[in-house]
Amino acid sequence: MDTPYGSAPLPVWERPEPAPRAAPVPLSRAKIAASAIRIADADGLDGLSVRKIAKELGVGPMRLYDYVTNRSELLDLMVDAVYARIAEGGEHAEWRATVLAVMHRTRAAALDHEWFADLLGARPHLGPHALAVGESTAAALAQAPGVHGIDDLQRALGALNAFLVGALRREITERRTARSTGTDVPAWQATLGPYLTRMLETGRYPTIARLVIDGAHLDAAETFHHNLTTMLDGITGNRPA
Image 1 (spheres, one colour):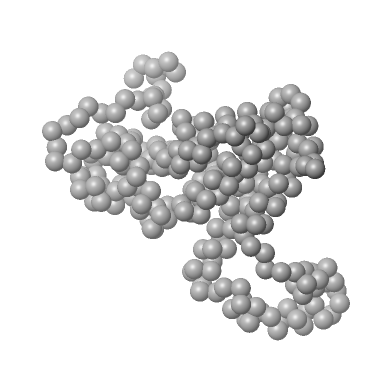
Image 2 (image 1 turned 90 degrees about the vertical axis):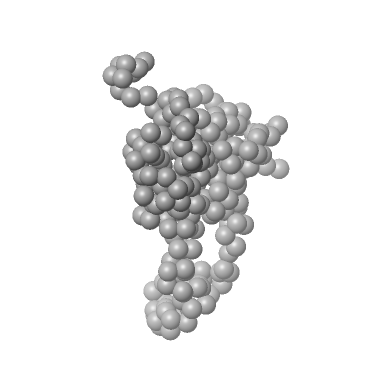
């Protein structure tokens, strides 16, 4: 296919939908993505397959390849559908409020679609809704005190994205572990508490002892917000009054 990129195929975002067919079940990329998201929500990315999607939609598997040529394109459509939800909140008048809103909506979307966190940072997200979220975030950070020029903006975005990916993957990993093992915090403490107590009583780990004995079990949402605001304070050089 001759394209503006030479002989390379057009990205899925720029290819027109296949012409409607006289078939019992109408299809679209949005419909395929929605079905794929439901399956991934239930079974994870490892449980996602073209055959499962086709079965849920009531069509033959080969028909889906009229709309997506491979698994990577399918994942791109799924990811951008999640970004569409993140983009729904719009922007705020103040830069910091915009960044906080985008980050919190991203966390909420990842908790609803845990597979989304697996793909954060793993590949470029270049769909129209992902680009809209990226533009909103970058434009807001560009207005922040302490961000002077493109180099500062690149560093700020890099630090913010690194925090987001790490925080969400850790939170979701803990949720998955609790589900798969049936071990919550009290159960873990009951199992390993005696060993940990013996180790801390040696006196070799005084700071860890303070964290274990005096530290509270922090709320995940509150911790995310606190660490996010601390990150914004640091990368922008802005300390709120």
